[in-house]
Image (cartoon, rainbow, N blue to C red):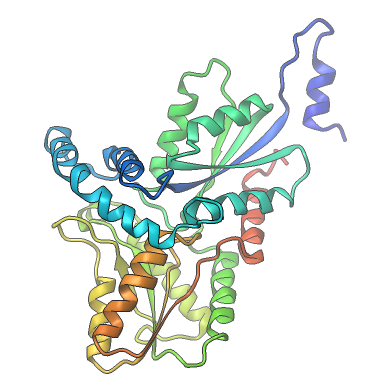
Length: 346
């Protein structure tokens, strides 16, 4: 069978200029990260992140003065301190960047040279636009974008889609684009979560009395407006409980990372963890199925801050279960998603 690349070469006229084409690109996209754990770099990152109308949908005339007049003058220093707590000094980067790159590199090993697997950040570097351009320059005339968010939300998956189509908008010769859907209920994803969770729990010298299933939060009004995120989180939680043989009481669904004063999805992770300790629960583990890579939300917000909250409230043992990261389970999941979503291409 003639490959796409060979077919393009065969169809080309002898005097046609050299044009790289015929390859298939895969772009893994995660949320984003500052380039350094410094207030200046964090400010630059937060300015891009919090300017996105998918993230904060308030009127620009109301929001931008608050963002640039207050938030970006106050929050970067504190956020930079939190990043320094988890920063990977050996490679001078955040865990999110480290694991996203590792996922791309290990996934690429599962494919031949016709498929190029790359990675990008929705906010920060490397940007979606720069990697789409690099894939196109490398001859990728068909590109599959895989948002690394298991549960769909307009604030995450839709924002990646926006960035992708903004990137190709100005191209005279656009590559064919596919966007992989959410995978919140994929059996392989649930099995991967279960496998990693069992392995981590087997390392403990104590047994959890509760295991909280913590997802990133979302303003309640986003859900009220039709965002499916809460339903996706609830389904992931239910399927994981069924796979692990847990009850809802043993493994409650909670939401973390609340920002601002408006009502967010509930129950809140911090309040739930504190209440469990007050009720006499001594041993707790937390798994964060909405994140495929460890990041500031999992390593600082949960493993450091939530741990302190639990222990200060009377708890005795706390364990944050690592994300899928670059485990073999995660790479197998990505390979399956890519092969399925490139059907007819690969």
